[in-house]
Length: 112
Ligand SMILES: [Zn+2]
Image (cartoon, rainbow, N blue to C red; front, side, top):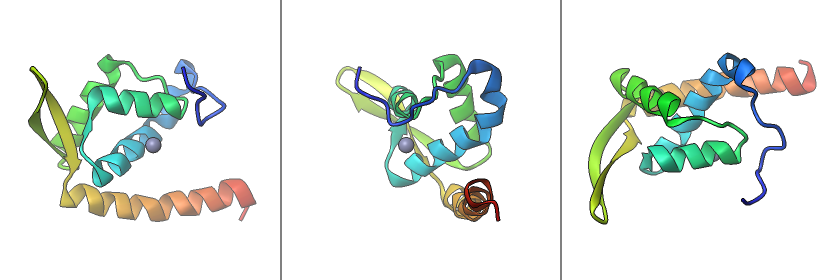
């Protein structure tokens, strides 16, 4: 396994604390390129989030139901997989969240 970008793995017990960050992370990648479940799980693992399919798939469905993502079936060799892209609503929500994240980051890291 390659070295992870994040030095700290998120503990299962602290998962609730990070649920919004995981959603924003998913939304960010879906706004840049089509994403699919397994690829996203690997990307999140790289950042130290171990998300099981049983958690990730409902999360993706939830974001789609809210209108942030839209899915379509994509052929991958012999199998079909579901790929997700951010919708205009998702991009708008992400842009608003970035302002909040920047503000939080400033306060957390610089104490102001
Ligand atoms: Zn990422």
